Amino acid sequence: MRTVIFDLDGTLADTSGDLIAAANACFRAMGHGDVLDPVADASVAFRGGRAMLTAGLERVNGGADEALIAAHYPLLLDSYEAAIDRETRLYPGAMEAVGVLRGAGYGVGICTNKPARLAELLMQRLGVRDAFASLVGADTLPVRKPDPAPYLAAVDRAGGSVGHSLLVGDTVTDRDTARAAGVPCILVTFGPDGAGVADLAPEALIGHFDELPATVARLIG
Image (cartoon, rainbow, N blue to C red; front, side):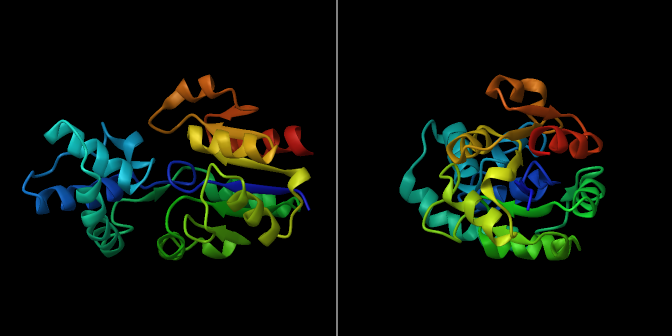
C-alpha cells in the first residue's frame, strides 16, 4: 500500500500556543515570569519541550542547566496535558487532504516526537484520531526522529510499504528522518520557518494542504 506519514506539531496542527504556555508555566515556577512568546518563539515550540526550556533559560540566565531542565520537564508535560487543545488548531485543509488520500487508497499515519500518550490525547480531542491508521510517538520505540525506526514503524502499522511511502513535515528533523529512511519528503511552508524550509532541499514543498494529493501522486504514484 502507498503510504503517507505526517509529522504532527507544525505540520498537521499549529500547537505552538499551547506548547509555549506549558513552557511559560515552568518559567513562572522558576520565578522568571513568561519568557517565551507564542508567536515569535513558535519555531522553538515545534522543536519540543526541552528545546523550549533550553531557549528560555538561555534567554534569562545566559545558559541552560540540564539538571534544571530535567527537573521542570515533568511540570511542562503536566501543564501541557491540562490545556492541550486550548489554542491548538488543525491547519486549513489538513483533514480534507487526508480524506482525499484515504479515498484514493493511500494509508495514512503519524510519526511525531511528541510523547505518544499526549499525541493520542490531542488527536482525540481534535476529533480526528480515527482518520489515521498509525501513530508513533517519541517514546513508542527506544529511539525517536531523526532515527528512521519510528517512521518505519508508522508505515508498517499503517499497513504500508516503505518503498512506496513518504513523510510530510516541517523541520530539519523531518527532512533528516526521510533521508535516513530513504524516502521522499514534503515540507510545508505555512509554519514559522515559512519558505526557509526550501533550504533543506526536500523533494517537494507545499504552501497549502490543497496541494498535497497531487504532490504525493507525483512522488510515489
